[in-house]
Length: 578
Image (cartoon, rainbow, N blue to C red; front, side, top):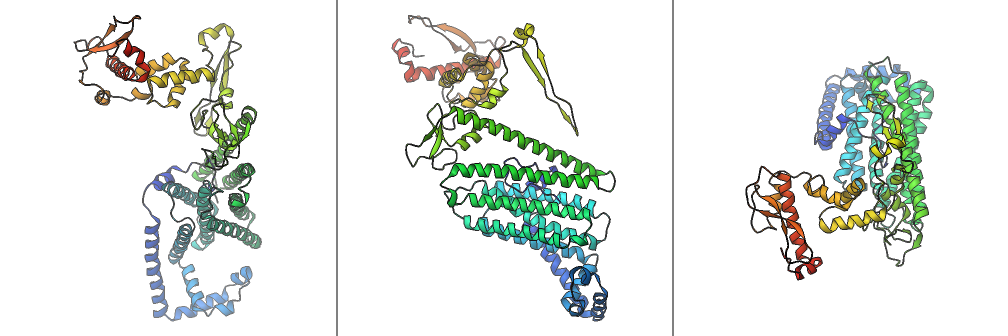
């Protein structure tokens, strides 16, 4: 039986679409489910007590049935003679043999587990954040959907008493899965320098570990009474629970203050622990799906369901190995390119993790970070976390085409249609066509930084990341400025008619109509002729487009701001004020 990924991995499996939709809604809530289950349980209990009180002969019939039941003695070694006369056991036997009351009992069992889960989370973590609640809800609903499909394969059209053991087992696994997921989500952000609540997290990690071990011993104890196929599925569940509980326990130990004196070793240990646990759990899930697919009763929708999840699990394992290779390449680049230094001040902290700096890596911009923090940062953005200084990344160097031979590479990635994936291939055009299809060499990091500063002087409100992305494509500061002014990126990319006029109303004294056109004015007083665009009110709407008019208005607005700044003191001294 498989669940939505309950561990704190950086790239969890995407929840199912139905579970995702239900998980984002407010219905059904846990409180509403518990209240409804309580009402149903009270009504059912009152009905059973009334039945026993009004019909005393039921006790005699149930006692005879219990004495004739040899399965309890054979499987569990229970002395039937001592419990057959107990009213509690008679009521339990009556409920379990009734086709309606058995489902009420199963629902009450699930409600008790849900209440215990909510109570444990409340005592351990107090209140969950909105993001944690949504993620836990989606994972739990994904688990419920997988359990329903699982039971349809394992039990088939059986009676209620055959389904009940699997429902009980699924409830325990769901209870552990939900607690493991919430605990791992909280351990993501646990800091060794802050041990607030760490004692409660340690208790819940030990609790999850011992419950997982107890489940494994229980399955091994009753293995002789099971067929090999259900036993293998139960062992898969036990191994998943043990691996995840062990992961939580070791993460809790490594995050304690005992190992805070050596943060680099802790990061190494956590990384490899997470990678190994993630891959092992995904492999177990893949094998479990494969067994359910192979031994399913015929080819039906459930077979397609398990085949689809086998594909998702396989893709997840491939992505994990790919990320590991990328992280390894980035870490080797950091160790070779940036020197390891000691922090000048013992109180300096890394801006990424806010831990004490200690031994760190110094970037060309003189900012220092932990090597592991820098690795995670460079995997997402090739710039300094503090000043956004552009730094080389091995990901960009690997993806940069080789322009030395004059050839052009065309790579076609395979598209996926359902379960079929087209092959990917690469076409290389020879050097005779390189000048036609090829592109100019990309600028160096120093050139990018210089062009970035030039563009930011004119458009300080633009984000450096957006400008850098366009500079890498255009290779020229002038082209990037033209793209901004033409509305192809950044500020004007999503402007509709009338929006820009409202933004410029605070900077211009007189609102100009859309019919204004652009004329070129030359300054006669200056020793050098300076040409700029100026707006004049005359009819010319058939000559200029709307974006050309807005471009002229933007140029004039930023020109006025520039002339009013300290950088234009020489122009003001020459008499250029407008």
